[in-house]
Amino acid sequence: MTTYIIRRLLIALVVIIIVTLIVFFAIRLLPGDPLIIFLGQQATQGGISQDELEHLREVYGLNDPILVQYGNWVWGILRGDLGTSIYYHEDVGVLMGDRFPITLHLGILAFIINIVVGVLLGLAAAIRRGTWIDAVTTTLANIGVCIPVFWLAILMIYLFGLELRWLPIAGYTPPTKDFWLNTQQIIMPVFCMAVTMMATTARLSRSSMLEVTRQDYIRTAWSKGLSERTIIIRHALKNGLIPVITLLGIGLGMVFAGSVFVETIFAINGIGRLLVTSIFAQDYVVIQSSSLVIALIIILSNLLVDISYGWLDPRIRYG
Amino acid sequence: MTERDSTTITVAFQEAPPRVNEWRRFWRVFLQRRIVIFGLVILFLLVFSAIFANVIAPHDPYIGILADSLQHPNSTYWLGTDIQGRDTLSRLIFGTRTALMVGFVTVGIAGVVGVGLGLIAGYFGGVASMIIMRIMDALMGFPMLILAMLFAAVLGGGIQNVVIALSIATVPGYARVMNGLTLSIRENDYIMAERAMGSSNARIMLSHILPNAIPPMIVLVTLQLGGIIMAEAALSFLGIGIKPPGAAWGAMVSDGYRYLSNNPTLSFAPGIAIMLVVFAFNMVGDGLRDALDPRLRGIL
Image (cartoon, rainbow over the protein chains, first blue to last red):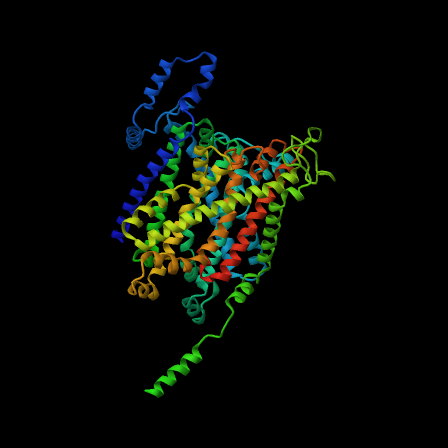
């Protein structure tokens, strides 16, 4: 087990280094000079001299050779300095620190709903295979994976926001400030974020449970005369839910990808919206750092998933 | 000696599986479920409307009549018109072209590159595998959509750049599956026999490993097509995908969003189109999986 963990850690380290290379060099290909774009308005208003421009370039380190810039960037990150945003004039660490809890709040709620509802639906469908429960769940799950998140959000805004006027259509108030308003505001975003995940979870847990219930040891349990309840809870569930752990890693990716749309549509200042705004503002400092942080979180949680997988299922650790 | 030989022959004869026509079996299993047929019909209709878009579209998708701006569905404009007076139905039909083209070209590029990389990594192992698969792992560290977003932003939108961005974002998936397939196919006795006979690596890879990996790859490609079309719509929705006036479903959803309260059809119709395509590809992919290789259930 220790060798397995060490091997996984080393691989993760290599992967992280490659991620920094991808993020840095891909984003630097962004068309246009970020400084010129940012200074555009000021330049047209009062004008900015060539000297000042050179000076700013020097300040942001844009005159150094690209490899030196990469080195400085990585060194900065290692010291916890994510750079200064060109667009917001703020420390990227602070910018992300403000927005992260919001995305996390939505994401964790969506994830909990996904796991609880998704696994239960999948289980119910597998146990009652061929009945109407199975038919309804499978159909819902098949539809759920096809719904574009951004479209679902708009549909909900129209129905619950504009027509029925049950829920506010945008914004985010911290739950500490006004818990009730916050709850109303996040119902739609959280649901939108959860839908695709929920459908995926239901499909996966259904097929995985069906796989397990076909195994010999389950037949043995039946022939021993155990009750259905015991067989499912004590025997089938343990192995049946192992593949569902993988969803922890996938789900995290879905949370971030979903946050891009949900936060943009519902006007919530989270990481996803920050990423979109920075892309349009061509603020490469923010794009680099925020996408790096997202990738880091996903890689590290996948590492945890892999390790717990190896711990739960010895076939993997020796495979 | 002769006696033993004859028994072996009879045993072998008895154990020989009944002759089945593989092709017929494939069609029987593939078309077994009604939902798969439904998916096939939708796909057929979509491909048809993509090819004959300029024949079946009732109006010009790009030039509208300003006087007919923001009409509700009526007998002239079945799905209404947008702010520029362009017919929503015609734009939807032309949008099929964009969606299917982006989908097929992307899986084409990403499939070939990904399968190639996975094959090389899986067959040679060692340093080649280390380098290729770690880069793939790194790309997979990003959610597919965010990676596509980053590259689309870097490259600057437009249909060609969207295809490139989506290809980069989906290559790792193919490479990883192909790598796994190659690793398991490589262990077969017939591969060892080929090697013992002195076949070149290229020959073993191309004429023995690749053909055996094709069925699962076809399934993967079909299931991925829906995801890619959805991702294209998502990029266009954000405004970093297909550029106006090009007809793209995602952009239509976002354009219509502005007139949501008085003309919701503008936003709703393209969304339903996206859902239908993704649904159709998923169902056909499921059917193909059951028909080609049921063992892939739960994996793909």
